[in-house]
Image (cartoon, rainbow, N blue to C red; front, side, top):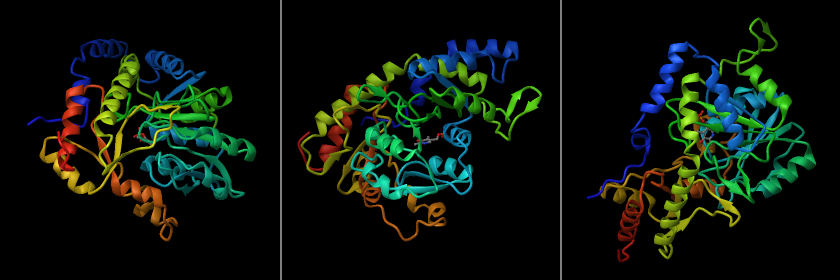
Length: 369
Ligand SMILES: *Cc1c(COP(=O)(O)O)cnc(C)c1O
């Protein structure tokens, strides 16, 4: 029996020597905090995302939180985001003191722009579209609403680095965009780290001050900030993996195509809706299926590791129930967490692996393999 693992981590850094050599240099210089490699990495990252500024911070969560703070969002303010998605989004919003106003998603798993206007109140300050599972939110209508109402937009690009809509990369629309380099993201380093990108020079300046205790320079503290810097050692790893971004994206897209070809026509299986003008980065390859739990067990019995993102939608978590989401229902978020299944799709899997996973799913639904 084949074994198709879900996480690429062991393959990804199977030859770490070039990175370790460069880290040794950092250690020799003792240049651990905001060292030369951080600046180098930031420049490369800005270029790769086609933005003017990139700022390395401690995590993807901080890459959301610090721009919110930098834009002056805090107590008494509301920030609109989605009802499914990852804990960090509401974590970042509540950490600056604001209230997360959740709205439902469409069949693409992204913010439904038609629900935006009715969620806006006099307290609303920003919209945080979460580009989920490698897909890209419908940014045109979201930006139209933001422009006509004067709201900030902060994109959460943590799951969709390198994804494209209408020829523009994730990170092209908002005031600023957050990326994560956590080991389970597209660009993964050896621990926690995040990056903010922006074209706004004033915002860039404030984020740089905020990530380093609010310090303007060594001795003057301009405001209350955070200790949230990207480690020099992690910037070395980031530089290295950034060079593989195109390859990573291409392989993931190839694997996704193999899934789509193989699984099309199975009545019990449907795909995450991805608009024609979108090129997903496929952090996850999500299908929606009948008898999800049984299929999941069958995959595991046949050596295929699969995941569910997320078995309990964000808004049904206790933390959210406690702040006012007890008596509401977000239908699409519910359906997607009940039926969604993420298949292994990363860059280190080959066509034969994907075809094996496909054959297991076909066998489960009684088709010929
Ligand atoms: C991972 C993730 C984050 C947070 O990133 P960390 O680096 O883990 O703090 C934020 N938003 C989304 C959608 C994520 O998937």
